[in-house]
Length: 271
Image (cartoon, rainbow, N blue to C red; front, side):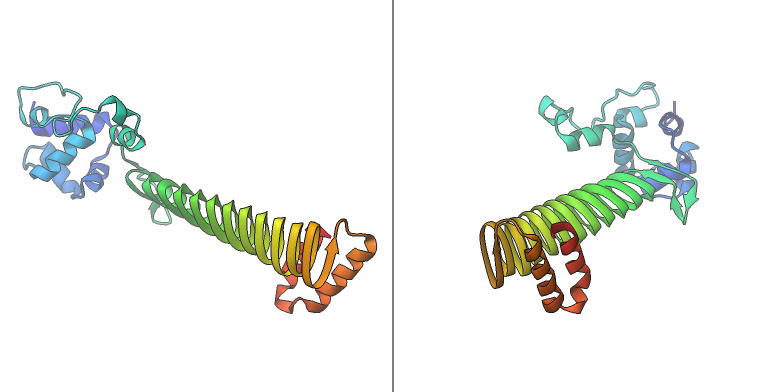
């Protein structure tokens, strides 16, 4: 069996079109056609990539007398038990590239690969509309490092972000930064958290510019269950109906107009 026949067999067994295989190997479709017809042969670097992609040895690819691949690429040492438990090792052994021929807005409907770009994209690096990857960038994005309109990840950056470290207009995370932020440690215009810092803050320890509500509260207007320190007004313990009226009037008189939206949120949730 010739090299070309083996390449065509491997490609079909793995459900690749000639165009998809060409994209993976970064060559033209015509090159794949010539290789499979034994009109031309790939360079050494491309042979190595083919071997890695299809998990076969160079002997199998180049020796016409060898009819069965050995299942292990001779250029890659067999994995030991420790490597088999490693995520990256698992991905290298089992991750096969797939790309849809159908497109939406010029992008493949789906793309699964190391560097994936598609309407639905899954890869080590993924870009598109709905994306999953170690580095993920999309409208809806899930990943170790995630960027998008809706971003979910260990480090998430987006209009709406959820993560261990979250940055966004609306941020939810262990450590959250945003216009509206909630988390164990949160920083925002409106902030909710165990440690909360912002213009309007609420938490076990709440530090605010204008108003803070919490067990310990520090702000111009401070409402604290155990301790409160307000430079303009201080309330300790449960607010009475009369206290709430005073708080609302103070907020209406002292908060700048551009923070009206934040003041409204603060009033709605806490007063």
